[in-house]
Length: 319
Image 1 (cartoon, one colour):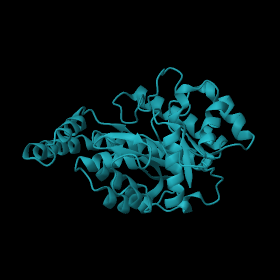
Image 2: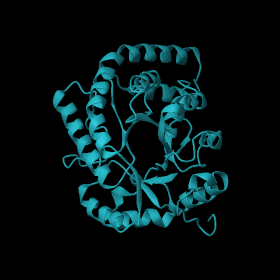
Image 3: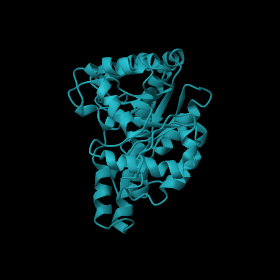
């Protein structure tokens, strides 16, 4: 099932109805309501939804954006923070987002869980890869040192995110949504792949908690030789709620239009995802409509099964 994230154009609109009209004009009939959305856009979105002119697959925390945060900052409050007040604010904003998800009949809520106190280590590895040092002795040593530091920071963060997920399960159940824990782009962030497996096993008997696969984020780690993308996706399919779809310019420029980056096995990876799972195009604001329409036309040729039951409008020509 195909959907399109409002993160692409929410910053340029003052009217929620016009925001959605721009997305349906690309050919999509379903959206994911994403972070960074000001509350002033909500009435127009609600009106469009109530008229049956758009469907909502899910939401991305926090939605709408906290009124005190003036920029798009989904990590402005973290469940892993050492500050109790920040963790409490993140929890209460998430409860509000769950209530909003219920209004729109959404099926899932994508969650960023937080980060560790470590900073800048992924950026160091990316800089080395850009300079051609991937798998050099210096690179491998730095990567191993990084992994050791990250593992040492794991217990405190994992304890906090498990505690908050356990508190969110009942509200999510009442709203009819799944809490989808997203794969992240930086190894400093929570959870790592090892932590994600532990988290899914902890909640394996709870249908309200699952895994959200972000293709661009995982590919960035793949490009740093921290993980094998295809093997990871295959391992997580039993827990999969849905995906964020975007391409990556090697090694770390993500949120590019599908088929325009350097993921050589892009289609092979996409075909691993069951067609009924939400596949949400999550693109950066600078991506041009003509390139999006062109990619949608190619997607229709390569992955037509993901359109089942949807009113996707394809461009008359690829241009």
